[in-house]
Image (cartoon, rainbow, N blue to C red):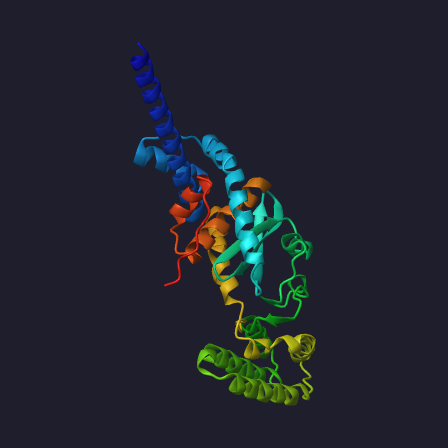
Length: 319
């Protein structure tokens, strides 16, 4: 009788474990399809029914997503801790719609870690809350004031953003400062692209020559309003233009942030908006996991599975 009881208990335990594993796999699949493949809730419910014969309503999917919040918040905090241990974070933000309100999705990243933050504000308090008491040595961003002033040593502004602004001034009629400034900035980016093949002395020489050319350009007096505005903007930020030339850890542009945030822009265009704030925050946490997984050579679905299982996203072993 005791042997029969043990067999029944063992079979029950195995079935329970299988049920838990099946629910976890289903949850991982739903999260992957929703947030990595950008499938809207109604279509996702239909897809699960058509392909797998699963009758999962939109409401059930929402509750499944809600139940995943704790696991992804914990993983995001682990990623954040690793990111803040670095010395050169980069950042950017883009707009979100939550219901009828405007929100913002921020990204903070460095090498193998990326954290997204969804907030109803674009103010610098988002950066302050993210950093806590940590102040990195360097920072890379565009020229938005909320993302500047956080580095202990220096800041590099994105030259790609600046070149676009210079081109806008040229298109608006500035022919005094814009054309030569664009060529100067493009040359600086070219030097940055081949920086690995250049010695420190050569880079210092390039920086000296670029600064001297910029001095001569800034001595000009554009009359066209766009040119005047461009000159004022360069005066405010010129000390942050060529920091990357003498610090090999800094890129010349913030393109890494734009690449990280591009899938979020696609998701926004496909799904339009979030119904609730917690949904936007969950998306930010899941996007943190997926992007960090990509940088650590972990497939998106596997990164989601590891997170739901309470396991960390391991960094690849150096070869």
